[in-house]
Image 1: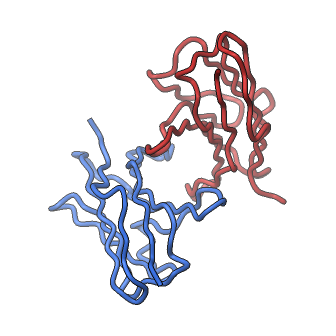
Image 2 (image 1 turned 180 degrees about the vertical axis):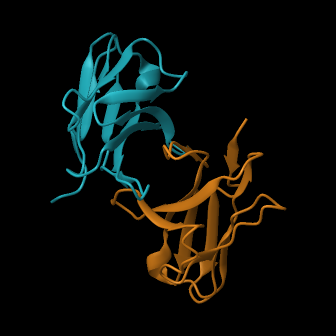
Length: 112
Length: 109
């Protein structure tokens, strides 16, 4: 499968714990995006990388959230001291020059 | 602020009937508009974009700058069209998308 892959698919954690999600984009894509989606809503932009550079970060993203793409390939999204409001589906997408976003299946976070 | 509005959370039509999923946007510049679709238990995928002017799976969408709309249409709905449909807008070449809340389309047999 050469599509975008995300891991884990589902994470259940207790409030206050740290969680990390991983995204492997399509290999030739230089752009990588993280989105968050809650029930009944469309995806909400979190952050964007071009190669290894994090070019944009949503103002809605608190300091507890951090994302990296160290070698311009895979990316990680870490949430520290999770809160119940962090429960959501975290979507990763990648794109090449054409602009079409290719999405992963998402990582569902449940904070108890 | 830029915003995408999909006024219908749920749209249910019979097979063979015409379908129109509404999308309105607020943006003063020249956005690029997209429709993404998510079939049951599948990932989000691009359905069409206005600059392509294509018909995909029988769906078309015309950008109406006067009405700031990008409605998705299909003349004869099929059961396999049942899915969640999202309208999205980008303002720049980074393709950071602003999304509507989505419309769930149910095609009844």
